[in-house]
Length: 290
Image (cartoon, rainbow, N blue to C red):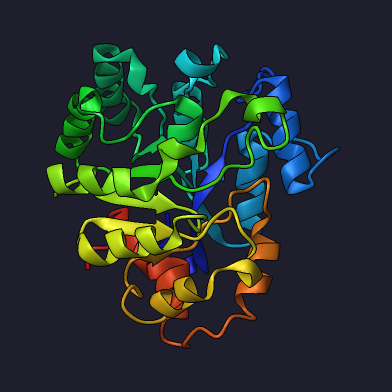
């Protein structure tokens, strides 16, 4: 990966379909997500298609799926497949993995194997979809392993489009994705780089407080068009958190073209834009020696 050739690094994209057509979500939850993001009828891109989309734009992308099999009963896309596909497009793709925290010791072993043998560069957690409180100490052995491996953990925070509009929200509980739960993780694992994904509605102020207070906590801006960002998020991104905020789109539900166009309309200082779009992520992901 030639960092100088890249215009941006998108730290939040999804592998939504495997090579054999298996979806990362059940039909019901996938339909709810499509309705929420108004992507009905859009084709789910394969990882090679995702790579082509980003290569054309000179953007690198972190790619992951979500393993929520215990909570949902739906088998995940293989982390090994995601990692192998990303390795074939290493000029633009960076593989993250997802392990189901409820799988206990098996999850810990999988995390170690995925980093050491498959080149995975970080882990994605979705507390609402995976139905767990991040600060439940039953899951601490998993964080300990990830911290030892020296890679980031990215946590979905705030509301989710998955299950939105389905009776009972498809069984998905929003309470699990309060960023204050992740504050405990940041305290107990101070050497674990943590990314709070998304503007954290309805807990935006909590997310800003955690990222301001904890040196190891970052925020990605995925899942929302920038024109809808809360004003306090823009203010902090422009000042106190300018070195800790990261570009993320949530592709394919939000295309980077739309995100970047709307970001261009925000009142962001010229010297801060490259930090958010590329430099902060490059440093966090170990792509630069700085």
